[in-house]
Length: 256
Image 1 (cartoon, rainbow, N blue to C red):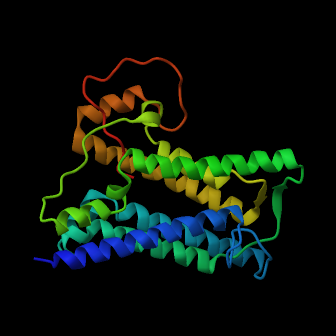
Image 2: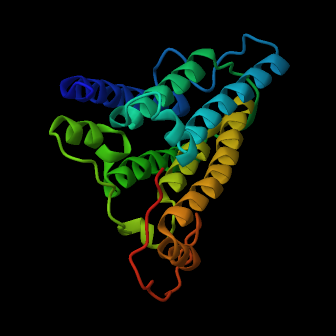
């Protein structure tokens, strides 16, 4: 048996690391005072910068998506203890993001750069709304389970891990993936859209749209008609404020 205290310590470290990376990511994208942000002075040729930035986004997308697939998890837990699978996933996601921040190449060319205070406030408000949506949504679906701390705690207590029950709190009643909606707002909400910010936003948007297809396929295979009903009744990302019939069973929320 893997040492219980070691699992809890490892889970706690990866969670604290996630909090730091999350805050840095917000500062990186919003241009707050950190060592490097998504916009900045151009120090590399534009072709090289765009190629490297595209590769960095692709590395994150592959890591984040492949490791979330059930088939990969079954193979991976033959190598590492199942008790720390989620914690390792969070750790490697943190590493992929830190590598992206470190190696990012800004290009000082802008598609738009709003100077008017009202437009600036509008751009910032969309971005801030996105980050708040992401944070609040994680707590609606169990923040600590999503980032592996609940799994580590249950293992430490000697309790068998049980997946979360099916719920559709708050925004999950109007869109199936409010967490992804929050990310999209965070990526696109800015008063200054540089070429490299556009590469990041487009790349992450493509990743999200692809990831949703795989994620929902996995959810239908795992939960069957419950999730299929939910999928038919609730839009994917864009709310449709129309009264819809209730599902016969409680639908599942996505395992983001």
